[in-house]
Amino acid sequence: MRIFSGIRPTGNIHIGNYLGAVKQWIELQEKNECVFCIVDMHAVTTPYDPKEMKKNILEAASIYLAAGVNPDKSIIFVQSDVREHVELAWLLGAITPMGELSRMTQFKEKSKQHKDYINAGLFNYPVLMAADIMLYKTQAVPVGKDQEQHVELTRTIARKFNQKFGQTFPEPEAILPKAGAKIMSLQNPKKKMSKTDESKSYISLFDTEEEIEKKIMSATTDSGKGVIYNVTKKPGISNLLTIYSLLDGRTIQEIEKEFKGKGYGDFKKSLAKVLINYLEPFRRKQKELLTREVYVQEILNKGKSRAEVIAKTTMQEVKEKMGLTS
Ligand code: AMP
Ligand code: TRP
Image (cartoon, rainbow, N blue to C red):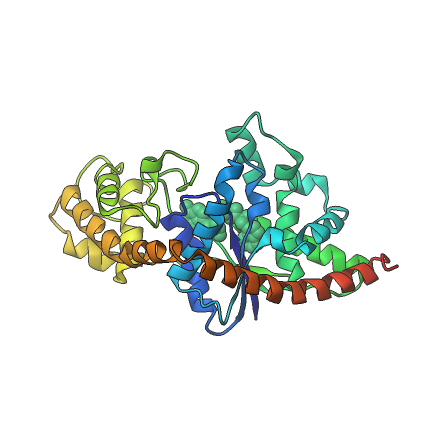
């Protein structure tokens, strides 16, 4: 199968991004042909600092590598390095109903969040995402729950294209992890963990030991006692139990058993330790990769060339089918 996924280089990549998306990639790359993108052209649709972009792109690349993406096998590249993404997005825009775009939850949420930054790019964001996916004739897209709607729209666009211009694209499916598809904020467990919230609401993959401990100890828990999984009555503890179980490999029931009769404090201390140990290789690898910028850049350059071969072939076919050949 051909797989495609991406993360916006907006800094502060957190354990929600990791557990929802990147962790799945590592398993999928064993048996599939994977394309992993750093989607910088999506990152410009919300407020950002141009001076930080390059650093954020390298940071995203180093996360992919530190998490275990194998650059000899999978393609790792930067979206703006392959022009065909925007080219296809424009053409797909011509068959995408505005009504569908205005129903997108992410557009509604982001325009509420950045009231003075509601731009056409934000509205068209899902069309560019559809182009990312379709350019590689992707069959499956491993993402977190919040991106399911965008993949569903991609299926609609692919279907429309095929009906209008002849069979060209597979209808891609989202792959969501069984657990961890929606990790919640540490400060407000009714809201998803998000990079743009205050930093104590998420654990970044590169947080220091002290930061991890502080953030976990101050995470919102629930009234009452007992380390018990119950999303409606105990959303805070349930979110922490999900994180614990995904990192530690034991089931939630086993962890509940271990903390039977113990308080939230003991549980949190133990979770902080699990996180510190789990994320230690990320911190170490990142430090190392930051001193090897040339090496990371080489990987991105090689990724660009490999991605371009596929992208150019698809674009040629699309243009022919749409009657745009000279
Ligand atoms: P983004 O940071 O929005 O570019 O997201 C990158 C990937 O992480 C996407 O596949 C998202 O679905 C996933 N993701 C983002 N936030 C979360 C979260 N809180 N829980 C699980 N997955 C998430
Ligand atoms: N929209 C995704 C997000 O916000 C990022 C993204 C862009 C993506 N293009 C993609 C994810 C293609 C999967 C496939 O998280």
